[in-house]
Image (tube, rainbow, N blue to C red):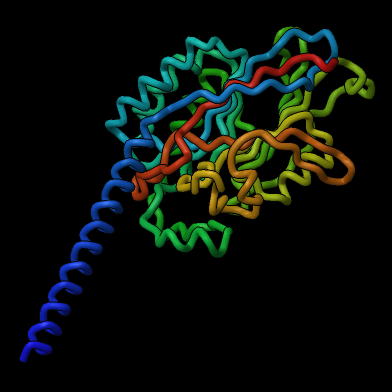
Length: 317
């Protein structure tokens, strides 16, 4: 009888310990989720400097925005974006995925209105065309192609958004090239529509006179998703810098290790920040933004706060 009571007590103790452990795990999980939701509001500005302009050229401040994923009611994000105009950038680059809701365009335009007073260029991402949908997060560890089935997706009013951008002077660089003059220097731009949904087609660089390459200029390439085939095309074509987004910096990262996924075929360690992309004997600075938002179905970031980037282009030494 004593042995039976002892065994029963041991079972009760084990059950209590298991329940306590389960409760602790749930509490920890809840705390992590809570922190992850809080981190989505920790907007920050990353500053970079690139010596890629012709010698003696005046500096150009480029503000890089990406993956805003605007949802109605995100007043903290809206106000933070509006205040970026205080930086007085010379040029604004927007690398897509501006929306995360069918009603996101009015608050997006309100957020960007002060910045649209400056010259700029943009390329779309899939979440400029289609509203996001609920996904199994483990799919991000598998197939990287995001080609949507239009019949199963909410088509967004992207034409209205693009018209507003264009009316402000921002140039749509989807599968096209464009040349403009800024601070006395010619900017040659090229961009592709979103490679994540197979809409990309490299248009090359703007065509000029037979001696145009001898005039001072800088070549800037834009893409939403930094797939290697696109980066290789830009690099082989001798871009001076590439701007991209899409990765969210991994969105959920392990401190001391970094991103677990990039949501494309870009190596995970390149999912956020400035690195050099090498191909065909050329090396080009690649700036990948961790973005400013998330899908409304996954409103969490961990060890990967949202960011805008101010890149100062300076003359070569």
